[in-house]
Length: 95
Length: 385
Image (cartoon, rainbow over all chains, first blue to last red; front, side, top):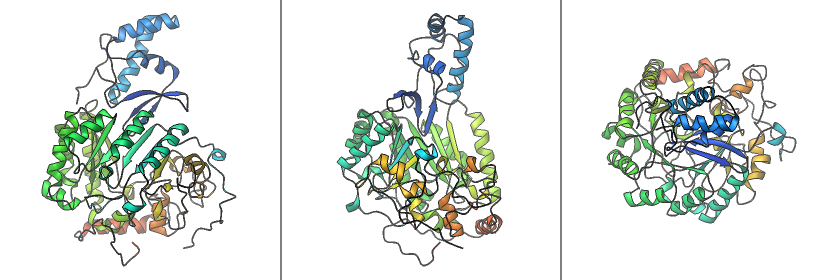
């Protein structure tokens, strides 16, 4: 059991052990799997989550994506924080 | 009440793809109906399958291959008690090798630390451990298994020792509902990630024991308040899933996300069912993985296609604007309580039978609970319900 996580730029997010971010070959889609849970993801969420490994900070994820999509880091970071916070509140992301 | 009119082959029924239904998301695999516990609310059918009829290891491997090829995401290894099977390790290994999210739903009492360690090494991803109460005497009485509760507490520790994620499955009813807060605390104490608080659902064994289990509306309201408060207090700490007895709901549950829309269930001998209670609908004919592929069955099986979509619905479902939200509620409940699986689930407040049936249940809840009819092989019943 973990304490409530507040996502900020310094947090290095990761998936809890029981949460899997996986590509389903037959469907050709990325999903989050957890006990009796299946989260379908949009393309942006998939791009963010591909960088989530427990070693990279939210800020570094945002920098990486801002380069990739040629968009301001601040804008990207606010999206990243919102999405990860939402997933964290549901128990799909931890630090 | 009239019974369903079934065409012999179901030839004029629309198939899954004609309904626009994609591959199922998850497979509930009942590996065996054998179980050391005897919970009187067991979700297994009243006619339990014997060991001799169970699918072999290779047959399960083939089912797993097919499930993955179809695009399924998850498998729940359940029972009965799945750990009675000595090939559980081989089945788990195959599931995880193929990339299915693999979940073990167990009473725990047959497990030991070495076996858990082995299962974890083989890639098992999650354990759901059942609890009958938080007080050991009452828990053991409900499960019909002496020493069960204390063993389960030990098993929970072993699960966490090998760093497997844990859900506590807590079935609540009038004989343990006062311990609801203790259930939640127990899940926290056991370091669980998640707790399932499920009110008994009344099919099969549970329906026969309904008077022993159904809470009063007041008990239920109180329980719901406790869960809602805990969900706020423990947000981000403990996931709480909550299933109410739909007898007291305004709308029926959209059972299984709609008949044959998202999930499938396999019983120990390989019959493929739209839900684990589907065998309570006597006219349904199930296809079996020994004879047909899983994909063919999902697409074509009459048992699935009969109640897919909305074409089969009579009124008041047919003209209801929630018909593609609730999907008419639960077919098994309609069958059990009205005698016709096509009727509107009487859990729905619009059902003409709603008030009669549910005031009867609420009445039962106010009387002294009868003795349990324990889940055992070979129990005979005098009355149909």
